[in-house]
Image 1: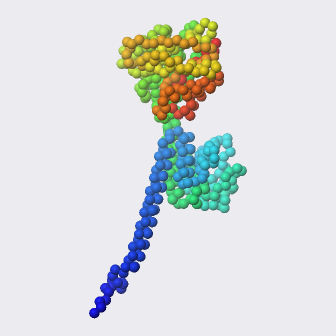
Image 2: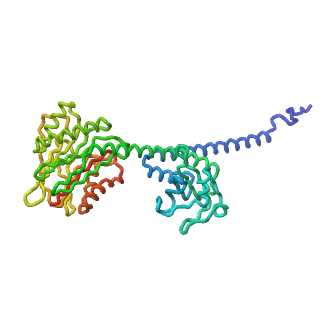
Image 3: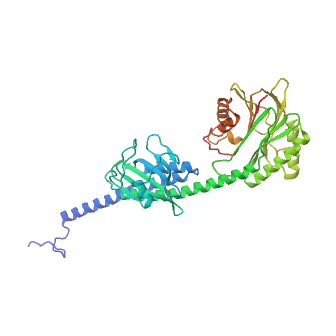
Length: 443
């Protein structure tokens, strides 16, 4: 007798193979789609984290603004990007652009957006703005002459401590209109951008305060007959720190000048205090000892050991004395310091290498070397601390060569221009503090 198939409560046969297989395939499709979505979300999250790290790695405000613009454009694959910085009255004070060929920034005095169109919508109502067709939008006012025609737009405000600092604009996504996901990601990036901007502004205030404190410890430049003097102090641009770098000029009778440049080991208020003490002691000892420079350093080392236990510092003391027939005779003694750089009027440069001696604070009983070199009229002697030529990513010889090449190229320019140029050879970024003292023989 034939057996009937067993039915489930719904009336269908148990184990209906075709129907069960169809459900399994649909479930599998849903699982695969979910996995693809999860992978995509993870990739976007990783991209967002990379973008946040990129804009958080800089402390200079100019660098931060350009990094925000470039990073946002790459994050959502937009062709154009801009950060509009707002002034106190809500006007555009600066515009940082990316993707326009030669990327640039425009500030007050340049032609700026007037805020009458879509860009102004975001200023007046600081909420995310997404437009699929810019040209047909009722608030669009067209593009200025020479401006690329844009189709899609995504804008989000950038807030710093609940105040709208500016707006981030993105235009013409590579694969269609901007999505809600793009808006969420750019909004999150704008939040991180606000923190990075605030950090950069705090850094700038700290850097200015540090620099002002340091400059107050340094002397004004005298105007001795027959010499032109210039000095520069540049604090480290990587981390604002009070340092131990200094320079000094001591004017003796008989047209003799004593030039000093030095660097106390370490950073912080303690180093700056020691630097000030060493500088003051050296002035007194220099008037007492007068010459040769090695005696000044020897006596200074003895006093420092007796009073302060011998703090470590590199110093170079140089006397510029009138020479027969014009020019100057330079007599100098280094205490572990880098050599002077001689720059002649015919654009020749030469480091005056000699026995560098030991830094102060090592052994005050050891003798110190003296050196002599004739400095022709219209030539310049540069004394400097190691921050000018040293960088962790570059060999010392390369740094010294770059400084010499720049000094040679500016040898005939006014001395202030030469000194300013030397502080731009790393695009204004220095790993360590720089003290620079320049003396040009005029007759």
